[in-house]
Image (cartoon, rainbow, N blue to C red):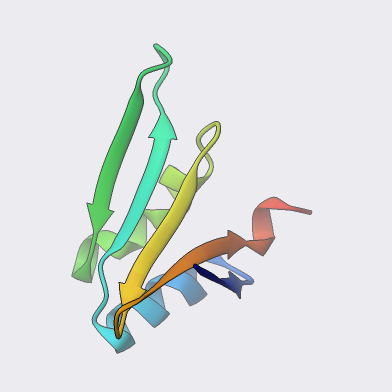
Length: 76
């Protein structure tokens, strides 16, 4: 798995739309249960909300390679 860094949620959403990839986000809900959501097209606008959740991670597959999303805006 390779890593790719994005500076803002909008950058990540734009990348997903331009490259026509669905981004999978895994996170834990308020009850501690693991959840998964797959965002594509217009739903990519919600990516920042999901990545802000505890223990969230995102990834996508492009040309048979998996990429882990590094949300730089959450590291500040």
